[in-house]
Image (cartoon, rainbow, N blue to C red; front, side):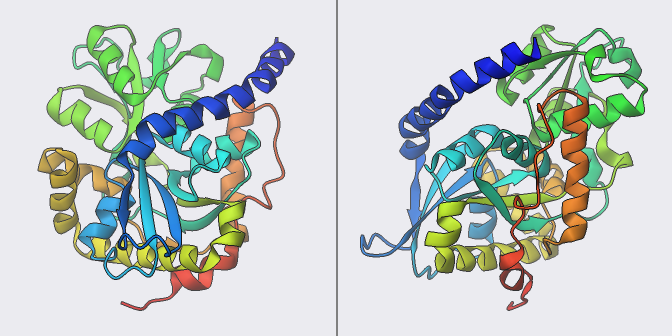
Length: 337
């Protein structure tokens, strides 16, 4: 059975990449918004972003002013399609969580993590959670056995669910995984088509604060996971100066947000249409300053790969030594506020 699934994946991979490019052309590029002026002679950095991500953060912090190059932003609904576009060469760099990065790298994507940060502050674990309808009979993670649990495959939501399932003494196969994007999962939970939904950030805030759903369990009992900006190998080598400048600006913007969370939340609410309370809640998942990419971080990330392997989400453990590029540390850790 496993061989059949892997064989199908090999056959389908070229089509997945093609469809990713088509979708990006139809949707992503339609929303590309340049910064840094319209001079066609300037170099261009193509950045993949998610709702309320780097673009909103850097604009709020004033780090998109006076760019010596142009930025073209492509917005994605989740990390998975962003990483597909990155692997296909449609974008140069993009922000993702540690679990989807691990899932993509294990799938053969030619990408590297070039910037690392860790969410900080009180309440950070509450921004990743398994939610259930408020009147659900499910009162513990153990009671998810045999029930439908929705999440994005290979996402931070799935990784949290795996950790909670293991903690509850269950096996991955004890739950009925239902792979949906966050919009579809939200609708499925409301309709009763699924029993629970494992998600993150503003989706948790909307589910709990706007829809009245109940948190079954969250990430409060676990160390905060690292977030990354991942880049294609071609961008690392071919666009290194402007990539380094962007990462330096991103690092400064993160320090600004850590010092001004309410100001960032107001900008986030304005740009996304989220209620302020949801925006303020969701940024706890993202506020965190740059951390070095080093051997300790790589050892920590190996735990995610091992967890995915135990659950059968990835077919084998890859050599991850080349997945994390420390060569931008001096740039991202420098303080030039």
